[in-house]
Length: 460
Image (cartoon, rainbow, N blue to C red; front, side, top):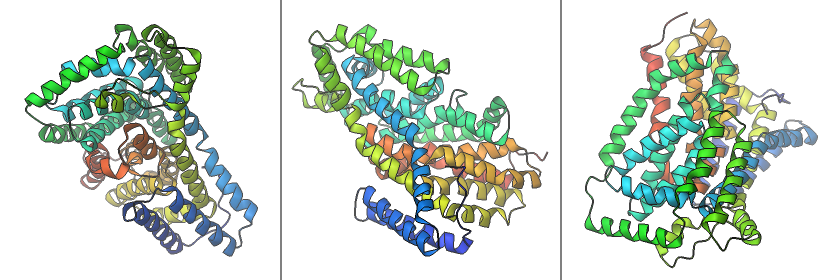
């Protein structure tokens, strides 16, 4: 999508007006009317198409913009399919039930949100993928949260915060490598520079999660934990070898095997393990599980609601929304609206504070307009290279801002790739978990603060 050339040149004020109208309309429909985002996004696309035709853009060019935007989401589409199958296969193989069983022994309700945040951060750094972390370990923690009657929105916020910290700081992460490559800095120099803002945000987030976590274990919680563990054992899903699919995932991720191959290998491993875990497993049942998701029939409501999930079919809503959102982003680019917004900002920057603020705002804005974190990194990075050079600032500070305000903001946008995905796998609405995704909320503010104070930032 980044290679698209705008068909027309739009004035900055005009681009700002169109963007405000469309994003306000989408937000109103989703927040005030509680409507699914599909229809407001389609209506926004219709408005953009009419706008382009009125500006003299040929329909074929407009259609090409839609197609180019959609193409950029094909990788995410396949990833969503594989994640859906991964969750259901890990349920069938006992991987997630086993994690939940032993986690109930270790975690409990005491300081639950803080522990969830730290554990997902460690796993996220280990495998370099926030989405995979949320879809696997995150699902297990959501199950624990339900079993302990804890707030699902805070739990989801802690999981997402930890997962994106891990993704952001991992040398295995796609976004971390992309940010460093986009501006031409060494990967580990980028991570070192990024740690100056990221570690304080991590500590601050941890303190808040620690303070809002429940402190005392009630008798009712102990009883419920025992009931959950007994129910899981009765299903026969708790086995020591059920963690093999997870180990396969971690090893392949560390070896930097492509994400789809890594997920496929873990799915295949889980399928094989499921035949040992469940005696009644057969090919027909397995195909149904991979497509429609795993269904638990234990008779215990809490366990059944926890384990009944996953499958390729569960991702259809998300995939359709991702493709629509990226198609709308393609129109923003093709009609020159995004270029006008960026041009209007970069033309007036020379000092460090305003430059960092503008770069962060652009990365955040592209997440809202296009809904794709990779494009927020690529477009913002390329747009501000010269500005950072003129301000005599090292490119590593640009790559830091790209991650602080680009990578971690995507899960906060309801129609973004990450926002849609996380809502689907964690079963918590984006706007519901948003206030508790502390790491993602604080990171852009921290990087802007550093820009104005000059902390850790030296002139070249």
